[in-house]
Length: 170
Image (tube, rainbow, N blue to C red; front, side, top):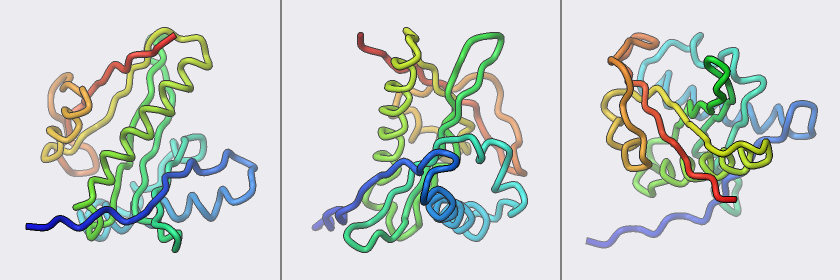
């Protein structure tokens, strides 16, 4: 059996608020999310864009040289009890491109950004949480995420909080 090679691609960070190109590139992220979460998986459309989207970091995976958007992931920073953490959310890859393991590349790109951001703030550790759909818990476990707490319902589907602690090098 021959596996097809992964198409040439890039992962870009959508520009910050107020920077040129932000709205168009962020909309491309939204379009992927709506395609995967709403059309394919049946999640409510009105829950897809939320309060985290404005300030979050959005990563966009595009094919080269066409710049066709095919995947996205979102990172946000928060704190709980004074302890900062990052939240991985809205990981989506268009169905026809999942065989190329682009989800893995998006998670690794987010982790690289988290480490750099935490280091730039002088922090000594970085915790990342995500709310995993139950069928993909094993995917996140490959990156060191472990389940925390009980399963819960989010947007009408069972989820599990997963937590990873990323090492920061000096």
